[in-house]
Every structure is written in structure tokens, then in C-alpha cells.
Amino acid sequence: MGKLPHPIQYQGSKRNLAPIILRYFPKNIKRLIEPFAGSAAISVAAASRFLANMYVINDLNKPLIELLKMIVESPEEIISFYERIWNEQHYDSIGHYFQIREQFNLTQDPRLFLYLLSRCVKGSVRYNSEGFFNQSPDKRRKGANPKNMLRNIQGVSKLLKGKVIFSSMDYKEIFKKVTKEDLVYLDPPYQGVCGDRDSRYFSVIDHHDFLLALDDLNKREISFILSYDGRRGNKTYGSDIPDFLDLKRIEVDAGLSSQATLLGLKEVTIESLYLSRTLVEKLDKEQNGKCQSNARQCSIIFEEVTNG
Image (cartoon, rainbow, N blue to C red; front, side, top):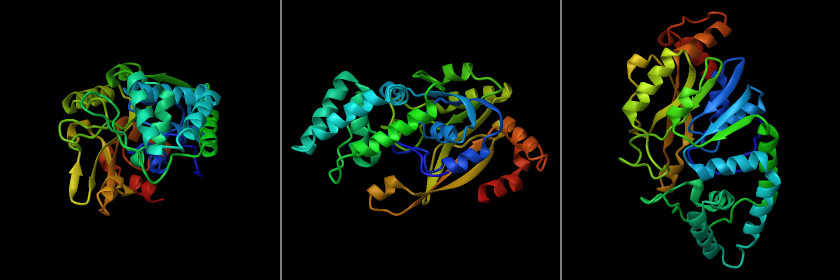
């Protein structure tokens, strides 16, 4: 795929897994829709291959969506602002970071958010119980050099400008707008990572409600790909996806866990991809019927795709 632009450092981003995920994209996608977009890594990767005509990038994290919109639509403004903030840090780097973090929590200015994401520990976004960003700075580095940030922002803007609808709403509202010509890529917050609350997000989704929403997508014959659970070492994260949804499950080696690395451990993360039955049927037709339409009988062809 080559090196893709990535101005936003975001733990949990699927940027490194994008080449594998894109293998399961069907042809003739009207819109790629990301209800839990995060850094929008999959949209950026898909746009680099011209896999969809349009993109819908949505996330409940409103400053993050506003930042992505600025990167795509107003690259010169965000680049100039970032360079100024980055250059101001050199006299007291740590103190400067905390000052910017306080300003961001007061104003929710997405331009400030870019600097924080670039400078915070491992791109690991964290919020406290009041919803304020509270991650600490990485003391070993000062964030992306403005020249590198310039190249990444310009790259994303070139790929997506004029092709994106940005929004910050509940995923159920996004689901209502989906059509059979769309592909939905879902990367919701995993349950079981941080107990009842995942501090990477403003709120976690209700597992039962989410399953019902997926069932409705199935009934409407919507094509979707879901990243939902995984395992690291002997630990499994995320609730099971029930059989009645009839999703094709594929395990993907995501490499060493960055969260485990922070704790001094070396553990490989295995993530799961789930393909909707409508998507499996589309891919089957594109493969000239090399596997049957029932998603659970397609393991051979999909293992070949994954290992190819």
C-alpha cells in the first residue's frame, strides 16, 4: 500500500491493519461509513485506493471530528497553528504541554487537540470522569516535527477533500442513513477493557443495544465489517458476538500490544474482524461463487484472502 499520511496519533487506530481490512471491501462502494471513526485511518487507506466514491466520518468525540474536518478542508490553517504551538514548547516543554491541555479542556479548540495528540504518551487518548482530557506528555519526545506534520496533513487533505461528510452523533443515527450501496466499517470501543467505563471514550456503547442494531443492519441487507473483540496473551477482550447474527469471524495478528508494552510486557494482540452475511455474499459473487453464500461455510476462501 505504501506509506500513508497519518497526522493524528491515536492508540487503537487501525492504520497498521488497514491493508488486511481493505481486502474484504467489495467493489462499487457508494459510501464508506465510519460511525466510530477515531483517526479515520480506514477512510484514509480506502481513499488512497479509490475504493469508495464518498466517505462519512463520524465520532462522538466532537473536537476530534472538528480536527479531522480542518485537516481535510483547511489544511493551511491547522498547519500554521500547529507550527506556532510546537515552536512555543522549547523553553519549558512539559509545562507548555499542561498549559495547552488546560486551554483545550476549557475551549475544546480542535487545533489545540492536534498538538496534544501528537505529544501525549503513545498517542493514548484518556479522559477523566468529568470528560476532560487528562493524558500526560511523552517526556522522551516533543511531538511530530512541523515539516512532517505538514506532509501528513497535506496528504490526507489531498485524498479526502471534497469527498467527506463529517458528523458527531450517536451511531444509531448514522445507521438510519445507511443504504445497500454503502459499506459500514465499525470499530466501537471494546467492552471489558476498562471495566464499566473505557477512559479512551466519553461513553461506552451498550452491548445489547449494539447487537440489536447490527441485527437490523442484517435485516436491511447492509454490508458491514466489524472490529469488536480480541485477545492479548491469555486475556480476551470484548463480549462474544452471538451466532444469530451469522457473521464471518476472521482473526488478525495485530502485533505487539502497545498497552502491554507500557507495562513492560511483550504480548501479541489478536484482533477479530466480523463480516456481515450480505458482505460475504457480495464477495462470494465477486469470487465467482468459490464459496457458498452462508458465511460460516466460507472459511477456505477467506483464509486464502487473509494469507495471500
